[in-house]
Length: 337
Image 1 (tube, rainbow, N blue to C red):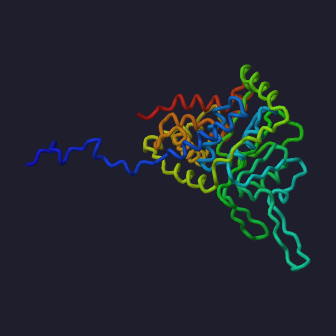
Image 2: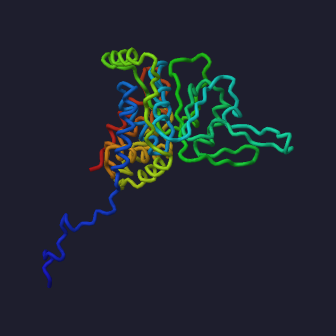
Image 3: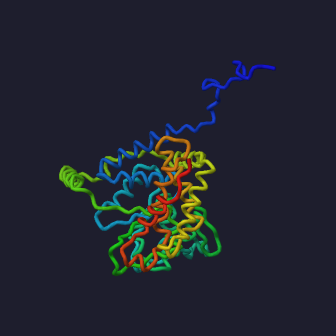
């Protein structure tokens, strides 16, 4: 009988095949370059920038929430400038109609036929400013396009080019002239990113940069770094990030806990579980790993879940927020080893 420890059968680090490992070096290089470009204008907000990049890699939409003047719109514009893809900005107003977004059929006198004129939604990166200022029927026009990346008008379907990403902004404080987003609409967003006020040292740096700009625009020196083909390639690469079975169960336990929590009136749906899975892969990728860790899942859980759950009315009156409850849930669910 042969010795199992002979050189022929012994497994060592030298003869293990690592060819199936994912090469994330080009992705990381582009991620770091985009961060540097954005940081030339945006002071701080590193967490927000990471979340925006993860959303792109995870092929998900983003809702940016913050008071006026905290750089929601300029951040979306900066991100669009670094990407060599189509960009469209739609300013939502109370009188905006669905056809103003999607497009409309116009009668052509020469051909005596109706022709479909595409609206601004037919682009790659869509910035929707003040999304809660448009009425419900206009908000509802986004349901199909955000979920299925297609539009159905007059019985005809129109597929949108990839990548297709929506970044929407809203002010959480202002009430007059606004229409609250329904739960079905909020569920279409991968992340809800809450932007806070800058700290004192960041505020000083913001003022200094603005003073030095003089007549130069903030976006003039921003370089274009990433093409649509590369975005599609990286999105496919991120899907291959490995997730162990115990981590899949960890995600499920977190989401199920939101449905059983006494502080929540409405828990998260299975779409939220899938969103955490995809987002945690994105966080792993921008950290240079081809596998997901519990920390990636924790980092993804709050921006994925905080807009998908509803706090019980009595707890909301006490000032408890959805993000605080989600943090408590994460702390109580056992981390897989």
